[in-house]
Image (cartoon, rainbow, N blue to C red):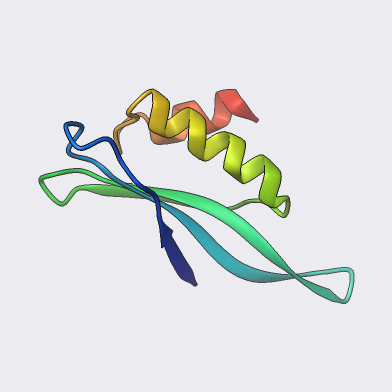
Length: 82
């Protein structure tokens, strides 16, 4: 699994990343995307395999960055977004 770091607002203290992995769907191999948030204290939360759409994960990443989502609230935000 790879992590693509996102540019976070300087004052937020969180580190955001898009997770890129491969998954098999019906015998085909494709990329799947997830998200990860790491707090200034080292606490982190990651949710892999949310979507196979690069456009959709970009929308989610923008939402997470704009609202400065913390590791504690990441799962709730993703579930609401889905």
